[in-house]
Image (cartoon, rainbow, N blue to C red):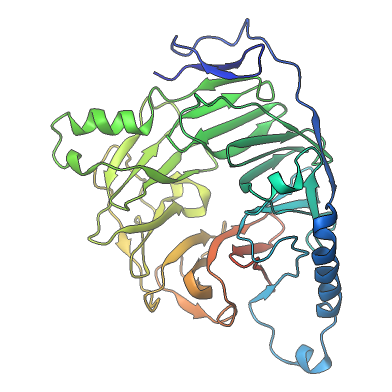
Length: 403
C-alpha cells in the first residue's frame, strides 16, 4: 500500500508502511543548493548566437512573402543549444503570461520574457554541462509564479520566483516508478504521478508527499487479472503515458496499446478498460482537458475516435463506448489531439509533420499542409488562455498558430 513519502535527515524519500498517515513529525534535510537559471554555458554560445541571428533574419519577411496567403501554422525560431532536440513541453506563468519556458531532451531549457516573440537558451548553474545534456526534461507546470519540472534520469526541480532560481527536490530510489507528470496547485502545493501509477500530493514544497491511490497500476492489474473477471487476463504490460485533467482525473495507456486505465479523485484504485478497437492504441487524452467532456483515442493507422458528445463517461464500465471520427490520415500515426475550449475547433498532430483540423467538434477532419515540408514528427499540441496554440516536435520544431 502506498503511504506518506517524507524526507529523512539524509535527504532521501522513503515510503511509510502506514497507510496515509498525517504529515506531522516529518523532518527536512538541509536544502539543496539553489539552482540558478543562468545564461547558457560556453558550449552553447555559438549555436545560440547563430540561431538568434537566424531569428532576426526570419522576422522580416519580404513583400512577396507578405502578399502570399499566410499558413495556419508558422515555425518559431529557437536558439537551440544542441542539434535536433525533441521538444516535450511548453508552459507560461499564469502570474506573468509573458514569462514562458520550453523543455526537451539533451538538456533543452529555453525561456521567453516577451510572450514567445523571442527565446533564450538557459541552463541550471550547478548542473555540469556534460551532465545536463543527458537529461530529458519532459513535463513542467506553473501557477502564480511557482513552477515544477520533471525529467529523466529522475529529477524534480522547483522554483518559487517565476524561474529566476531553481532548487532540486530529492527523490528516493524507492519511489514507485519515475516521475512522469507534475501539476502546480498553489503556494507550496503540487501533485506528482509516476510511471508506476503512484499519485502523490505535497503542500510544503516537496518536503513530504502523501499518496492518493492505494496501490500501483501493476498491483491493480495483478489483482484484477486473478479475480476471474471476463477479459481481465488481457490487462498486462507496462504503462507509457499518464495524463491528468483539469479536475484531477487521470488517464493511463498501456505500452502495448491493448488497454487503458482511468482514475478519479477519491477512488482507491485505477480502473482498467478494454480499448474497444481491433487496432492498437497510439495515444489518448481528455476532450477539452476534462474527463467530464469526454475522451479521445487514436489507434494504429491514424484513426481517431471519441466518446459520445453530451454523454458522461462512465469509468466503471470495462468497455467505454467510442465513436469513430472521419479522417484520412494516410496511415500516419496521430500522436496528440487538442479540442479548444468554448469552440467546435480541434487539432490533431502526428508523424511526418501531420496536422489535421476540425470545425465540427472532431466528427470530421481536414488536412493542414503547414508542416508538410518540415522533417519532424509532431508530438504535442497545447493551448493557452491568450488564444495562442503551440505544436512541439522532433528536430527542435516549434509551431505557433497564425490566426
